[in-house]
Length: 282
Image 1 (spheres, one colour):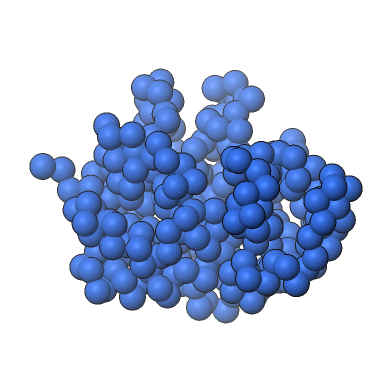
Image 2 (cartoon, rainbow, N blue to C red):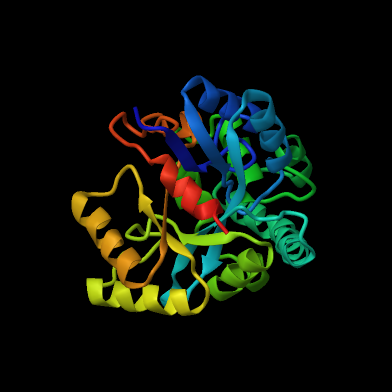
């Protein structure tokens, strides 16, 4: 029987529904040997997850999924795995980014008010994660009050129309450097998706991966539940040609993505333990 891992998961500190502890407990109950918590642009769940991993005997990688500004107006998601969240380079950049996200809340609420939904800053405080407000606090407010039936509608209608400010996002190049400084490994998440390299031809994708490798990218998320055989095979080609590490996970969000189960996706998905071993190997 294959030993399973899941290196792409989200808790209620970003847009998942489970607490970090409950997520790790579920992993233990599901015989998942190793897990990375990779909340979007936030590390506040790491301590709880690490403690739970020790309690439940699950191997754990502290992580983050960074939303990073790229070329052609694109945004890429960069997974940082095995990061030292206390590293001074990481912390300085992280706190700066979080402060700017908090400062942008007034503008987002102004736009939402123009759509006839009125939210005051203090109404978001019960939904804060950590020290600073962010778009995920607004998302949690919307979902708690059932203002939208689906998460994607909240983004599409009320938040995506307000662009991120310059200092609210790291560039991809900054993200790769910061993750490396913090002792982590960097991976291009769901490389063919919209928040990825979708829209490029295969030769163009390869050119971008070659560039990202030159900037310090360590690997590609090779295992992803919705990948077709062709997407997986092309990831294998890129990994072999550019000597990249493979990673993989379900992109688990709990009840916010009901069709995706921790460790197994829709039931026929698996990431072998050797992937985790290769990532943590010096």
